[in-house]
Amino acid sequence: MTPTPAPGGPVHASSATELSLWYGKFRALDKVSFAINAGEIVSLIGPSGCGKSTLIRCMNRMNDSPTTRTEGRLTVANYDVQSPNTDVLALRRDVGMVFQRPNPLPLSIRENVLFGLKLHARSTPRADQERLMTEAFETVGMWDDVKDKLNDDAESLSLDLRQKLCIARLLPLKPKVLLMDEPCSALDPDGIAAVEELMAELRGHYTQIVVTHNMQQARRVSDRCMFMLMGELVEFTDTDDLFLAPQDERTARYIEGRYG
Amino acid sequence: MNGTDVRTAEQATAASPSPTTVAFADLASRRRTESLAGLVLLGAAALAAIPALAIVGLLIVRGAPALSLEFLFGMPLHGMTAGGIFPAIVGTLWLVGVSLAFAVPVGVLAGIYLSEYAGEGRVARIVDLAIVNLAAVPSIVHALFGLGAFVLFMRLGTSILAGGLTLGVMTLPVIITSTKAALQSVPHSFRLASWNLGVSRWQTIRHIVLPNALPGILTGIILQVSRAAGETAPILFTGAAFYLPILPDDVRMQSMALSMHVYALVTQIPDVPLEMKYGSALVLVGTVVLLNSFATVLRYYLRRNRKW
Image (tube, rainbow over all chains, first blue to last red; front, side):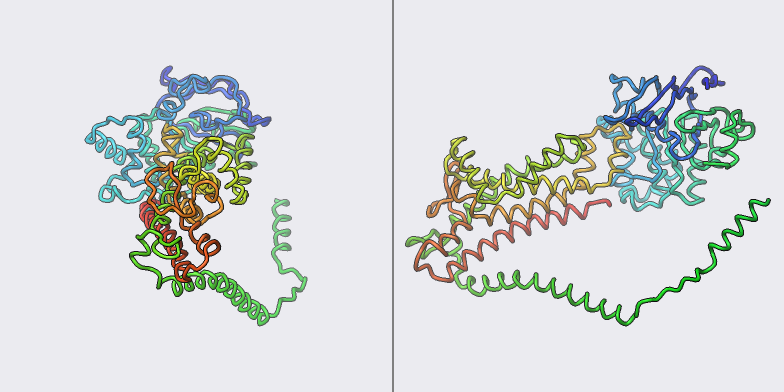
């Protein structure tokens, strides 16, 4: 399909042109093209193995391996992602990922959020570090939960606070795009609600690309939704339109729960 | 509607208990087997502990009378049938020190490479195979290698340096393997988290992986300290002197060593008082225990800081 024209203007946070990817001989992405606008929330849905995780892992080069091969063009946050000249470390600084299982670093709560900053901007004055850390925790809405125990192990936090911490630790690096790979699937209903609320809070400030198995969640959180099937991007349109009036027969069958 | 009914009917059949009868085993006999298993396992564990306790006990009973300040810190006298063993203690510390100075940096860096950089490729497999084989080489063969490579080819002569390097080569495989295992036991999700912040591979190793693997790496090194201090064969032709009653102060010198000294007292020299033989062996074991406890305490403090 052709990329949907951006409604808010030409500022694309991310775009792909005929992007294909092979793991060895297996084609995991098949000529995927799209344009994602800065600041919007895009959800990726589709059955297991359809390529949605592959696609977001491409976006900050977490798929790099000697057996992986790509074709086409992928641009994320002004980086020509596939180019061998791209500075992968800078790309990942600007395009961070949140994983299915919260994976705090084996450091204190404070150090988790300052870790990236300390390695990317060693000379940041201590006062600025503290301010950036506080802001990050306030942004994800967990400052009151952690302000009295910043030196505790991050592992001591509850599961949903750990997941929020994993989002918070990206923020001091001033990322442009947040990639989320089923960020709620390890959480209980309260945790899911908290993280979804947070995603709504972050809308407009960061571009968020969310892989989810949960179609209700895709409807709740995303502005636009991509449906993928067997490596192909079948349909990419406003979330409401995709769920209420799918243009493609395969999309319709999937959202009606007839397979997947 | 029809299809739904059929499905319900199928489920009902599958859910009803199967008519096939099952003959359950006699519970009393299983309990007997269970307690017997417990006894056999306890017996095996006890059997393993007996030799260790017997050796230490024997050494203490027979060797303790020989221990004195003069024995520990004196020079051997009268063809080693009297006096002390200080040069052998100092020599062993030198040899172990040199072997660690070589084997720890090389072994740990090689372990890091194999765990974090090499991947599953051909080169990694060949290096792995070489290391496993090196670990299986008998210590006397290491001695011959040390003689050829360090003493003769590199012209180091019979010296603490040559002996220590030979011990180092001998301990290298285990240090590499245990380093690799310790690094690989650090959860991969930590690396993913760090890489996703744009942190480089080396920075991730330096700040996240290595600190969490240190206790495991130390365990491997501890085991090899004992081995380097205890082995006699590798230093036989490469660094150990039979009788050299001076304290070494240079790695180019030869030196006495505890393991070699025990061997000499027991088999080579007539008329050595029995308690001197046992006393020397006791000091060898004591030195190893001391070195090990130091590393164990260090490991304890490192582990306390571990966050997972």
